[in-house]
Image (cartoon, rainbow, N blue to C red; front, side):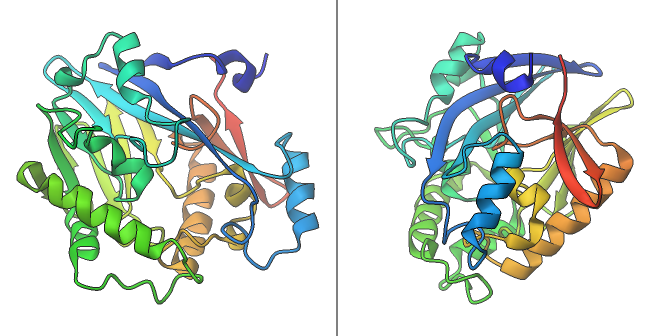
Amino acid sequence: MNTIEKFKDKDFFKFSLGSLELLVVSDGEFDLDPIQPLFAPGIDAEKIVDFLESRDHPSHKLIFEGNILVVKNKEQIILIDTGSGKASGTSVGKIVGNLAAAGIQKEDITDIVLTHAHHDHIGGIMDDQEEFTFPNAQIYIAKKEYDFWTSDQPDFSKGSNNEMADFQINFAKKHIGFAESKLHFFDNDDELFGFLRLHIAPGHTPGHTVITIFSEGEELVHFADIFQHVLLLGRPEWGNQVDVNFDLAVQARQKFGSKWSESKAFTFGDHLPFPGLGYIEEKDGVLHWIPKEF
């Protein structure tokens, strides 16, 4: 039984890392149909079909999971990102219900660490009544990310004809401004709580953050949107129009894909097939996603 079949009806999945308890909680999933021009702009459509069919993925659309990682110790319950809220339609925004199914109430969340400020990562900060979804949580974001989105004119000049820019800017300004009273900032290679290491990996956004969770000699690398889909794992150079800096995001995928493949790092992808846990492996010069067997 492969990982997609095994977990397709699951709302959450629990596992341990050293002394920490971790959960992957589903916020739902969303599709991109048609694929172009948002992803792989300018690439021959037949090449995309061939690639997706070789990965047993539907050939006419991209499917994105909304996997949210939860980290628990005796004192804290930490969300890494908050999902979409209702920003991407009715198929997402399920995090509160699925947390409750795992025995966690929204009031139990003590901290939220944001990888970046795109709508499908910060939308869940605010509920339908424009109140804090997680009222007792403090919120952490890279200072570089905060500065970019709250500037007068966020610079999208190095993106690839990003038609989503206005939406993303307005959404980020609204949600970051709403959360201002709870915000705390971090910089590159800072650590939080004694078990989160924060590495800023710009390209997707200027303050996009890779988070390594570590405990008792074990590590899990949360790579956020370095790889939003297996399409960009296997073909990092194809790129997408969501990235604020198209070329820098390509370089980040190439750099980190090779690094994590060589180190055999245990990794987590928030948009990869649920529960998004696995390894990056190089075969014949191409990177592949290998789901972890449980």
